[in-house]
Length: 298
Image (tube, rainbow, N blue to C red; front, side, top):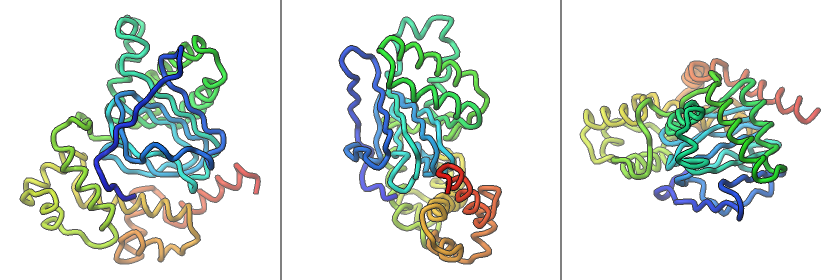
């Protein structure tokens, strides 16, 4: 999870004769690694991951998804890739389109009001679940098969259905858009890098405040404004997300996962994990295994 540099600008080039880009990875194991993990682009990005489990890292938000993901990422919002060799997803579809898609005049028509509002809300990152994820994700997978005009019309309708859905979670703190040009981003990026390298041990407020080159009170105010959480809560959540990944990817014992994730005791880990996920670590691992067994018929 190391972030060794500021997010890298990804260049998005639609195919000739098209206004947006669709990428479909039917075999996740051969997905190209050319795009850096921690990156951004002016284009919005709609991603559907069918099945599997992994990490959401969008702006200041870090969490864990299971049994697939459907996410809409706003313009210039830094994010990591959502799949890797351990995700165990079946397919992934990525759509990237300009903020004024399909064009400025069309987007400002009265009929596009809900879609325009959706694209604005996407500046925080939006994760969809339930029937919305299943139905609209399956429709996204059809995009790659269609001619350019049919593809554009279907994407507009998908966005309209997402705009109407209440099966959605806004990922970043309300009102804060972690865009590359936003003030304070370099400071936050340095904090993320530091957390990635040191989250397995205790990190005190004076220590992390020094990384930000701020006093403790100023740091606490800054961090709460950026993330919507206190530093202690954010660090605990960061560790839980890492633990979720270990529970799905490794055969390590619960105790091993607890200490590898930075918790000082098994009881502390169990309490924090259940508070964050609603399940004990054992229940969470069992649920992941049931999902995998049902999907692959093991």
